Image 1 (cartoon, rainbow, N blue to C red):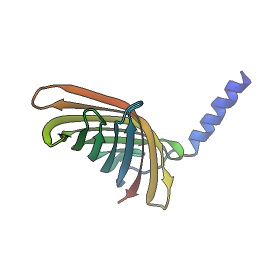
Image 2 (image 1 turned 180 degrees about the horizontal axis):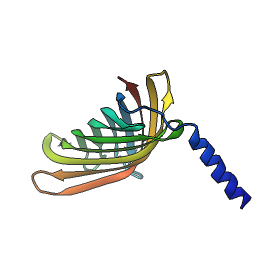
Image 3 (image 1 turned 90 degrees about the vertical axis):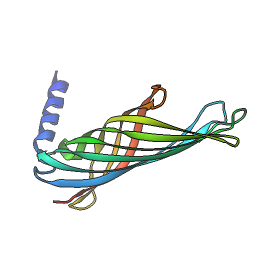
Image 4 (image 1 turned 135 degrees about the horizontal axis):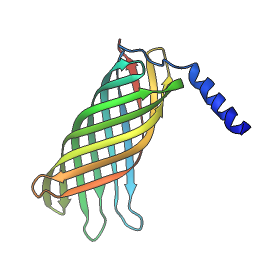
Length: 189
């Protein structure tokens, strides 16, 4: 019982001193970057991708930013023998972003993206291009590290889900998992 009371008091006192991280009316902008690699176990299949995600938001109330985000992703993969398939993908999505800063710089981040992508498949001398509709969703938590009064470095860890729909055949595929990304946020006003 004493241990539980101590925890409640500690958490309550910790939250009391840091109630306003970023003030209402502030305009913020920034961007995040992400790099991923993959290798399929027991095969020659491997790949990599790079994403760039600029965003901007407005604090509609203290610590709550609502805005928009663009996501550019480029990726490539190779499958070894016997198919020797090479794939290059590029996609572009836009959508809303919501971020709520808790006490002492901890924040919750949610974003969605809607757009399209293009995949080029190459086997030998044969190339095939396929276009997809894209839907992306991320939710995570991060920590805002103050570099200056107006610049923050913000690493984030969380869950993502991405759904692609082949525009020619209505075939859907979904990929989901954990992500780690980092970015910078700048107070513009």
